[in-house]
Length: 132
Image 1 (cartoon, rainbow, N blue to C red):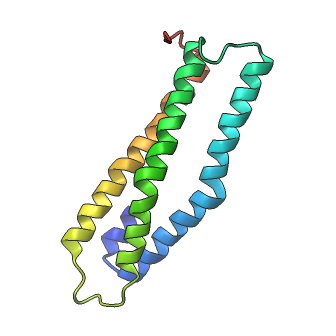
Image 2: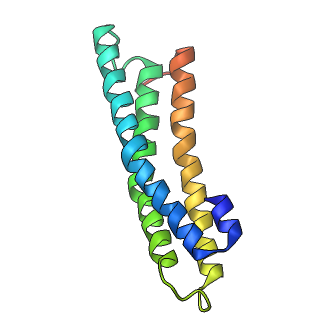
């Protein structure tokens, strides 16, 4: 997306955000559902108490935050970017407003990306974090 935005061509940006939305639907959302489902299943089979095992509990919290951020922030911003860039009026395009929306999208994508990365680290290292 950043490369597409640097091109300052609405057609390229529109095509890119459409591809991002589609890849989220095909790859990212199903992958997050499967990782969470199979992770919970593996913890239950391994007889790990989900809410009393710190690295499992906090990983689930982080994955939930990532999903919440995606649903509440990223997805609406992606739709807004698509709507903004799908208009053919390139001469009257409000680049400063678009830039503001794009930077907000980038910020939330970073947040949503970091949550599973931290969860991954917690799960690999089995960090003995405290739970409630």
